[in-house]
Image 1 (cartoon, rainbow, N blue to C red):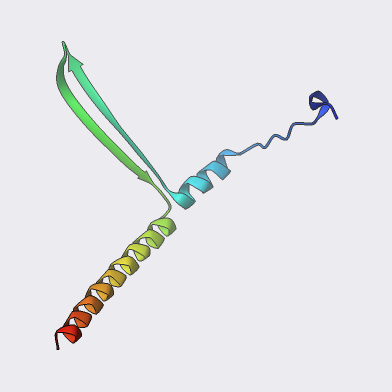
Image 2 (image 1 turned 90 degrees about the horizontal axis):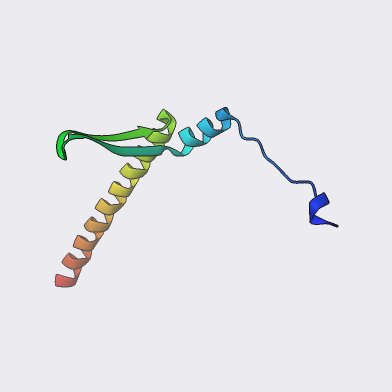
Length: 87
């Protein structure tokens, strides 16, 4: 089969699908704007935007809380192991 005659597979992605993917995973946009005159910086603007759905943010928050709890348990277990070894 000739490569010229093979049908090309093209996938159209709608704006709604892109928005759904962005909100599902989250995205951080950051940038800097500097306004200067004669090489003297007059205004500096640092921007950071987090775009995500509320559901995604709640999942991330729960994940961070679970990690903190696991770390506290690990630290507590290390202390009890040290106490047992010293006895």
